[in-house]
Length: 90
Image (cartoon, rainbow, N blue to C red; front, side):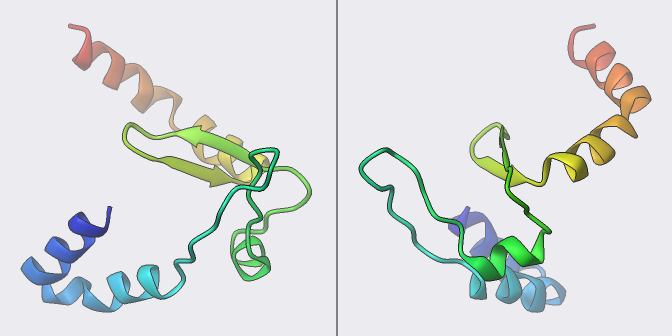
C-alpha cells in the first residue's frame, strides 16, 4: 500500500494532501499474546467504531468497518454487484 500511495502522490500532485492525510494517521500495531490488536481511539472515533468491528478481506489487504456502515454501503450496491459478477464470470 505504501508503494501505491507513494506512486500516486508522485504521479498525481493533486492527491498529495489526501495521501498525506492517510499516512499521517497510520500507526504500527502489534498483536497481543492472543493475536488481538488494539485499534487506537482516534481511529475508532474517526470511523464511528463501537464495541464491534467487521474485518473484511479486500484482495490484498483487510479493512476494518463499523458493521452498520458496511451493511449500508454494500447493500446499496446490489445491482452493481450483479453486473460485476456477470462481467467477471461471463
